[in-house]
Amino acid sequence: MSLPENHAVGHLKGQLHALAEISKTLNLPIELPELLALVLRKLSNVVPPAQAGAVMLWDQSAGLFRPVAAYGFDLQIFKQIGLRAGESITGKVYDSGKACLLVGPEEVGGAQADMRPANRVVFARSLGTNELSLCTLAAPVFTSEQKYGVLVLHTLTGPRLFTNHDLPFIQTLADLIALAIDRARLEAKADAVREARESEKLRSELMATLSHELRLPLTSIRGYTSALLMDDMNWSEEKRREFLRCADEECESMEVMIRDILDSSIIDVNQLSLEMEPVRLQHLVRDIVSEIQRRVKTHQMIVDIPAEFPMVDADPRWIKQVFRNILENAIKYSPDGGLIVLRGEIRTTDVVISISDQGIGISPEDLIPLFEKFFRVRSALHYHVAGTGLGLPVARSVIEAHGGRIWVESKVGQGTTVFFSLPKAAPVLDEE
Image (tube, rainbow, N blue to C red; front, side, top):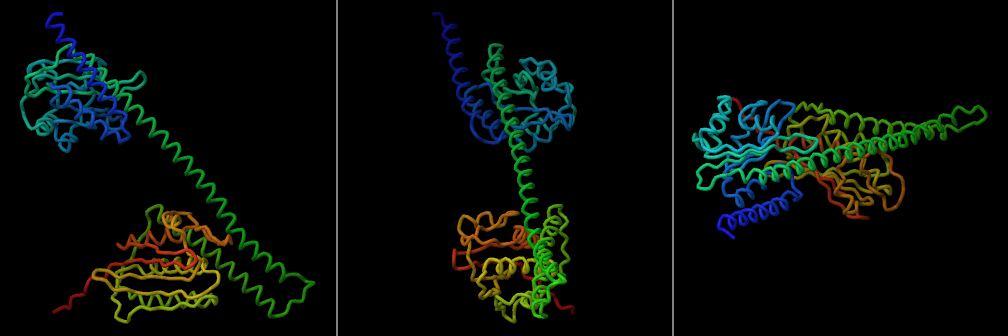
């Protein structure tokens, strides 16, 4: 066997090894830009002439080729480039659908002659040189059904250059990249379909839950009022007042549900508007506790907030809603009554409010999704707890909008404590 034949066999083995390595890389479960960047780095290691390269994809919405991954370029600078249809080597190879080899600065410069000046500046800055490539090889990134873009490889300093024998190999590589892009986009579409189905399922479940939850108090109200309207029944005044009180409680339950739904809708459309002002939380807490204690006789609420508690910058209307949501949960999930304690802690840059109950508690697996919309804690006692599952998600959105955070600690059978923090108000400087 002659020396050239030995060289050709060795070159072919090298290409097959490179394809095997890159094929394994293309099957890694990572995001497409990271995957293609890894492929280009791998390519530079196994194909010596590939000293710089980029995968340029056609952006239909912008009408431009954009780099999705690059090697040998400063990608942050290179991302500023946008090649029009037919512009430079990328545009020409995309239009022709055929791989192209340009050898020598003259051929490379001729193919890039129509590159717009702004793109030329970005190209040179991202590559770190104004010198033209010694050699450029470009291959279309196509599948049988979809045109995605172009793989462009540059030899900057030599000594080895691409040859025509490399064209089939690089085209095969570009085809593998196209298949990877195709797979990623199909997976993205499948994910979108699954999300849409999950969203529709969630919407259907929500409507069923809301219909059920709202029907319960309505049924109770109708039952009490129908009983009061019965002509053949002579209810005592005590019994009439009891029926009216029960109907009033059911109306309040419906009011809470509707309020949660409206608050959640406001947050969902990014219409949560805060009107900040200095607030003394100890005064606000006592107002809320008095409001709730007037209608709740099964629980005793204790407020333990120091008199020197600092002011916070907050929207009192929304912070009151946070307290209502947390306290109503504490009441619902402690059916045997007991103490609900509200405490305040002063820290260096913020304050922390805690609200503790003596209720059924929350299992560790339920603590993770606790702040997700529509999530309902499962009761170990299997009794029904009315509600929409929106109170805590609304509270979290409000607290985070104030620059604080909210979290929960709980033990099954021993009660739950909800904590939230709020930044201290900025100190008011005395005017001289």
